[in-house]
Amino acid sequence: MKPFQNMVVGYDGSPDALNAVTWALDAARAVQANVTIVHAIGLIEHMHEHLSRDTLPTALVALAQECDFDTAALQWLVEDGDACSVMLRMTDPPVNAEVLVVGSRGEGKREGLLLGSTSLELVEHSPVPVVVVPSRFTER
Image (tube, rainbow, N blue to C red; front, top):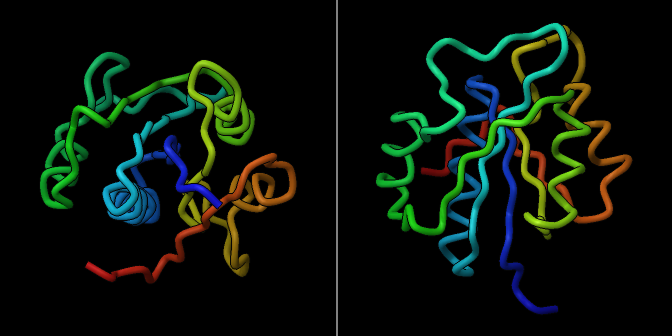
């Protein structure tokens, strides 16, 4: 199995999403892969006021620096659609994700579930491997 070159990680601003980005940056650095961080904007949700379509959020820039990840290999995308559909589209050109990474739970938390609806749906439908980073991930 050859190392992957393109990884996509979902980001909704939640603590679990930050854990997923951290994991993705560390894993991608180890295999010298590119990372695309994707934020999905669904029909009933709006863009977080602190996020821009054009500029990588400063918190993610700082996290990339903390992870010693080359920001030249980092891309930020904001896409319209539900989170799962947006992530699944990332496996097609032009991104061609070979691995999808998500946190186990996002902002729409429902008590009692081990996995959020997006992570569960991705695991069921993705044509590429999916990494679900647990809430308690604190390897750093």
